[in-house]
Amino acid sequence: MINADTLNSQKQIFGHPAGLYVLFFTEMWERFSYYGMRAILVLYLVAESTPDTINPGLNWETGAALSLYGTYTMLVYVASIPGGWIADNILGQKKSVLYGGILLVLGHSILAVEEMWAFYTGLGLIIAGVGMLKPNISSMVGGLYAQGDVRRDKGFIIFYIGINVGAFLSSLIVGYVGETYGWHYGFGLAGIGMALGLAQYLYGQKYLRQVGDFIGDNKSEEGKDVLKKPLTSIEKDRLVVLFLSFILVIVFWGAFEQAGGLMNIYASEKTDRLFMGWLVPASWFQSLNAMFIICLGTGVAGYWAKRKLKNQLSSSLFKMIIGLIIMGTGFFFMSAASTQYETQGSSAMYWLVLAYLFHTIGELCISPVALSFITKLAPLKYASLTMGVYFAMTGFGNKLAGILGEASQSMGEFTIFTGIAIFCVVFGCLVLLFRTKLEKLTHGAEDDN
Image 1 (tube, rainbow, N blue to C red):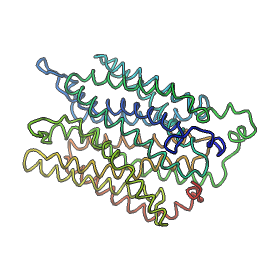
Image 2: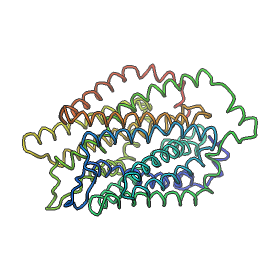
Image 3: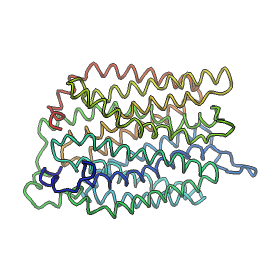
Image 4: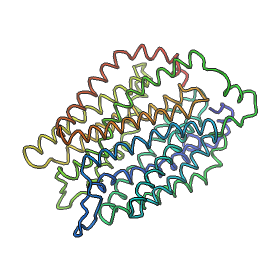
């Protein structure tokens, strides 16, 4: 974390350090590439492959496709643990983001080759690239603000909007190109997006001089103390709170990530997608989440800020619990869609729209809040590693999503959607009962931020 004097010397844009916008656009293009590929991955896997097929895929069974999707997205985020460790112990955050970007460009580009060796090699490189980039760029955002800077949460909201600008554009552009012109053209387009992100990251290095360097290179006594000093009892308590909050993260993403798997296939196969005589691409529904975040992000952040000013309950843990409950409620709309499909042979698009709306409001209450929460509670010498563990928990949630999606093939969509909704609401209410005890273990960390 930089000190206040250094902060005051930084160039400011719209009241925030200029480096925030460098990271904003880097993450925007990284998410463009990742979510673009994610939007068409399972559709490519289950697409038919016959001589008469215009846009052939791999013709996998739905269960196998969802299983691979869950494993792949899990590994993408679990790789954040070694990615964070490398940053904390060898490279620093800034260089780790750079090398991660290079791996991502290579991975997405190789996916454009229509060979199975290229498919698996590309996925492997993307896993490594996201693992290097994702936890470290998020930690760098927190490092742009001095201890006690009240703008940090707002900075993470701005950063999070950047993520979703990329996700919104990719679902529309990469999704359309992949479904219309060829899956591998879509994969290649995702690689071009990441290349643009890498180029602007390199150009913006002059605004990141005070953040993301390897602290092991710090020759001062202060830098040595950061590495060698054992954790205090307060720091240990704060880590306990973080790791317990990660249970919420696993449950949340296990439900939320049905978007790229089961809900994606549901949109393709069981939803009436005709709109004024035009067939809406199935992958476009995934852009709804990003669009809602862009439209509602500042409003949700403003709501919580007003509650805090009025001394009403607005702690990070409370926001995360409420986010889980709201997101879970959205699955009741998918239960209604399943019921309509069983009675009419197809379900209306508005069920998906409503589900994504509730999922988005829930996400805004938990995901950017969790990122900021980690930068407040994690010990400095474990900053990237702790962020890596958070993303690993996200990865386990993704794998859980794949397992649940695969189970729908035998249990049915209605059972899965309704079960997810009930579990999320009940689990959120149970955690709410222990919120006060957990917040005591933060030792006032949020009071100073």
